[in-house]
Image (cartoon, rainbow, N blue to C red):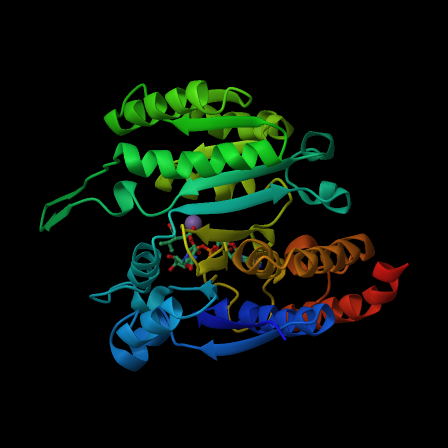
Length: 356
Ligand code: NAD
Ligand code: IPM
Ligand code: MN
């Protein structure tokens, strides 16, 4: 039987809560789709600082590198905000070490969710976009200085770093509606002027079939709310992508809904919901696990090539939306763990549907 090794990094706060649901969903779908998963779980982020004094140990990194795919819950929390090495540094270290330079964050609005957005239902109807965020460069990884009364963070990009993530975005656009919007701040920043020049050259030379546009990030933040359905693929650098994707999570109505795939040129990829550890609701079994579940669908599809398994999982999530099986953030009554149990019930009802 096809067998994959999966590393689970539950992390902190609601991370372990949504990871438990993700794991149960993975096990259920694997059994239904006829492949096997071998899990190994490792402390990560704040949980790893507490046990080993650092957010990402060499042993955890080795286990990740030897796996087929990594599922990550979330890291961070007020407990470690003053730690010498923060939980977030472990996440950045993992992304860099694995060279997962493209972070794919799909944002779509299921028709049953149209009334859940703070935006008018008719504005968010039909939203289906993919944010491609550069993940291992830019201001997150530039040289930095820290003194008592002065600090600096350098933002740098090379042509090669821009080209490799832009190729991913152009190719995704080809698989979708053929539109790519590159977002930068080329009216101010040198990195953005290079970004725009490189992406434009690639569009003209290699992807003339793709309808390429450019927007400044401030205007993009506005257009995302003014006419969100007009976006197909959005390509942007690390920090702009971080901010715009949290904004975009309000189109379907909760940050708890969005998943992501962080991919490099080789396995393993890292699959994680876009939300954080949500200290305000941690430990209360209130978190929405759908972002984690969507990340599992991406793990199956982009991480393992198990597309049928991903479709099975997404169909079960769709059935839950249609039934109004939601957690509190969407006005539903389910706890996080109940949502997980309900999902498995929907999954197990499916084979008859799939065969029929
Ligand atoms: P957050 O995403 O954790 O929470 C923002 C708000 O959204 C909170 O009100 C929270 O309750 C809500 N929320 C988040 N996920 C939810 C879910 N699944 N269901 C329902 N509601 C949900 O962002 P924050 O509060 O700014 O950050 C908290 C910590 O998480 C920080 O330490 C931050 O660095 C970290 N963080 C980690 C990741 C990651 O691990 N990938 C991502 C973002 C933030
Ligand atoms: C995310 C998070 C991380 C980021 C933090 C926790 C380092 O916000 O995955 O979106 O900024 O990339
Ligand atoms: Mn973020």
